[in-house]
Image (cartoon, rainbow, N blue to C red; front, top):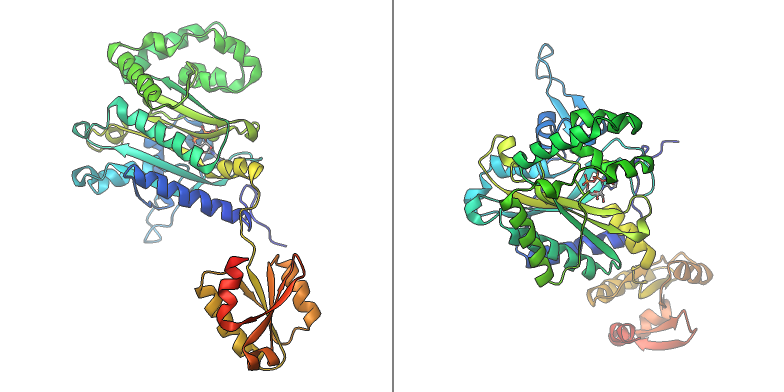
Length: 425
Ligand code: ATP
Ligand code: MG
């Protein structure tokens, strides 16, 4: 038997209703902040991620699905292509390619699948879904200002509240600008020299290649060492320090609760200044629902104009897991199951079903060949509130037997009153 590939999954009803609820709420909330949707391709040139995400990141160094495409002629070498592991690089590529900055399109959001070859577990898949938004534009559009950071964090807090996600936590930090990071990286490298040998294999490698990443390590034995490493906030110059202070003050004004976590660094190379993460207690080891931050240098790193930006990516799978803990099923039961009884009654039944559906009711329809017993069994398996019998007598008289499946109460209702009766009860 052929099964879904490891790390991928089918999203089935009723869970898909939660996905739709999440996406509808996202669209409504983001729209209120004047974001508009962008849809970028699912695969891109490998170079985009190598440059936009960073060669040294886990994503690029070990998690990407990359292949060589066939060239146009047999002799021609094909392009290296990659299934997108994240969407910010694609959005910024599109921003540059279509000169979106010139058109004032500075606030974009996306919803869609991403692909990473990771060890699958609860809340961690090889095809997973992200919801993200980016504010990007020339500095003249104010895209570098602390108010953008605070506004996006306030929007996220509002979204999680609107979704009914309870007990979320917001942690923020500033990772400084490129120069400040150089100084901090040097300090880290120095501090790591005498201790790196006793750390995990990944940290031993990171200690020389990209010491900032050591702060990201999740290995418990490494934590006491990491606790004693220098803090980025001590390496921020005046401007970054002020930017971070302004973001915090604005969050307080907007009533968004947060904690400063000086160890928080994002896994991607292009982040500058504000970095943040929302976590949720019910998710176990995979407790990060979303992460994001500022990436003032990304557009230039991809060959575009200077365009400071800030954005986030939210794990939709994890969001739905958190919602499922609270409300596993939000699907409304069918209002009625229509049971045609006897040869020729399908004709009246399909017309009746159409009229009731147009009145906004959820109707399921049987078939005239079903016996009464089978119709009742089907109606209760579907969880219908009522069963409506459409027999030859009913069709002739225009009055129908309507039975409430919960109470067993049965009434006779004229055709013209059916919709109102079903809506009222
Ligand atoms: P983690 O530390 O959990 O691997 P990350 O730093 O790799 O997260 P990002 O690249 O910042 O995550 O992606 C943003 C969000 O996307 C995460 O907070 C998480 O909710 C979700 N996410 C990332 N990878 C996966 C995955 N493999 N399966 C499901 N959701 C994921
Ligand atoms: Mg990861």
